[in-house]
Image 1 (cartoon, helix red, strand yellow):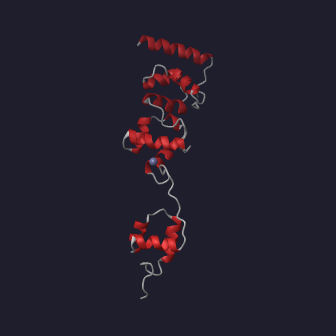
Image 2: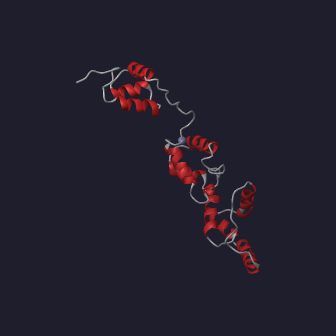
Length: 188
Ligand SMILES: [Zn+2]
């Protein structure tokens, strides 16, 4: 068997060259991988005139499980109306931890600026109904225990949330239905 050069087994030099050129693995780790000392890897790299890639700074969202999960959730329809509680529950872990990753993703433009900002679980529930069912806003509000759902919608629209128009058509007949609904509420 031919002896080692640079303390690296012959035949593995190509692999090492590739690792040196393409990865940011430290010499120490490469040494362990190739059965050579850190110094030997360093010397080999220098001799070959390799310019190693620079490790990117900041949080690496591509390799982060939490970030990837957040991106996945953010791709759901109307994801800006998913409350922070639901997001945290779905991912697991603490809210503080989650906020860090979310901020990074917003800064990088990988999730919408409004994603993860909804605090109210009731508003989340109300919106979920609003998007799917042909119901008056007051009825939806009553279902989830929100008195001011229409004003919440108005507030969100003002903040730039994309709230589609209600599936419920407020024509004359519907108006009288709302009136009777209000009456019904008063009587209870
Ligand atoms: Zn992350």
